[in-house]
View 1 (spheres, rainbow, N blue to C red):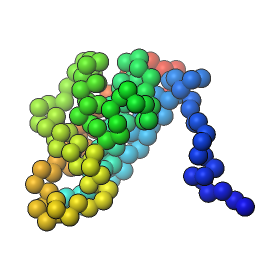
View 2: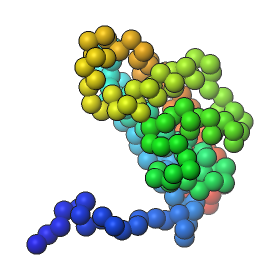
View 3: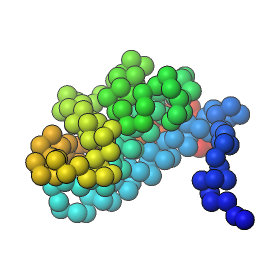
View 4: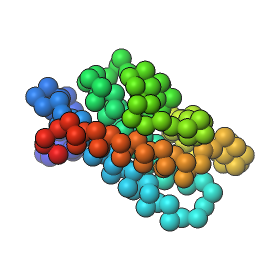
Length: 170
């Protein structure tokens, strides 16, 4: 009998952080960049609400913020309980700010507002599954997709440069 991939991995710990902390950081940044590229390519649609693009951009932003926090010396994982949970962009941004994010990238007040708007929908999985009440109301608190892509682009680019400067293995 063959086990499904999910069953085969259940109970296993997959971690490279113990043996090579920088490898985990590079992987986080690579994933953030890949999600960001997908979000950028999703911009070809001329619709007002682009949930796939917003999800991809928010996920890139989440991974980039986690990479930044790790770059500042805190080893973090997606499932780590002492950090904000998956999708909590506002808390991750606050944690990154407390670790000097503005020395690397300075999100404008407008970009921060867009992150807060996006965080509401991202953490509630609205970019992944339709929330009918929001659909009917036309997503009144919805973020600007281009704004989220722009802030994610700036953050991912800056983090990639910082990682490249501090790591020989890139």
